[in-house]
Image (cartoon, rainbow, N blue to C red):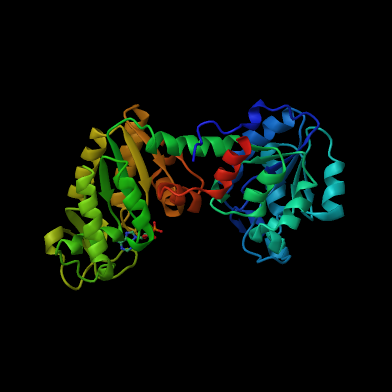
Length: 402
Ligand code: AMP
């Protein structure tokens, strides 16, 4: 897929036009209030720009999983209110996304005004990418902008279908996310390290296989490192591991060797008998894990070694924590490395790109996010890109420009 020059909405005359912007408003909401507005903050500049250029901005998004039927608990109304607060200007919430109510509310928008339509997933046609639903949505727009990279791994009406029926453009956040990933995977400053952690090998096999051909060093941490250690005959006690994947782990190691990609595994670990906060723990070399203990983090020698690897590299791609970072004191392996990556980035020595659910939470907990070159707000889409898969939402934009 050639994504080098996606058509950007920045170069289009939008004055007076109804611009349907697919954003990702799927933010955490508790007690009717947005509890983490990071995703909204990332789309503000794009919306402000359209508004200032006189567009009539119509924002569409999914929210939660209402499974094709209206559900007041999954209304976008509170999110629209928060968006207005962040934009510092009124945002009209329209309690429908298709039909007369939606179309007449959109028709009433003045140039520069911004509206949010109700949750797309109140209609089964959204996830089915149903032609009639696409057509109904398209009646509220002259142009379509996809600014939701984080939803681009889904071929839904709002992420794929609309690009077939309206003039389609990439929004600034979409372009930023793709550029960050391309900077790491396509033409990076070398050497490149990938740090892949998290719970299980099984969920990351395609990522590991894809990265091996792209990066120079692969640092493996978290629960998934246990399976790799086991495949070398290491006794990991009662640690989280996937014994049925020992052969896969060996294949990945062999493929890495064939590609000249150095695999870095923990040399010491933090162990405990229970998976709970404040529990008695100890640091042991990897060959001395007691049979009744669990590995819950990498140890200080591993942190030091991993930091030394980072110092040799110019680019780092990070997905997944190095240990059970949510439970004290098993976050140090993740936080120590995050702080070092942040320091090297601040000093201009390392380009750091990170993403995928828990990774962002871990980097936030380490206070490293502001220093990283780019932290993606996408979860599943970020992971699928790392697997080397074509994302339907991006492919649709590429097709639209052909
Ligand atoms: P993932 O969603 O695959 O990236 O996995 C993230 C989860 O892996 C986090 O909740 C961590 O607590 C967990 N994790 C990381 N290392 C370990 C470990 N050594 N043992 C158990 N869980 C771990």
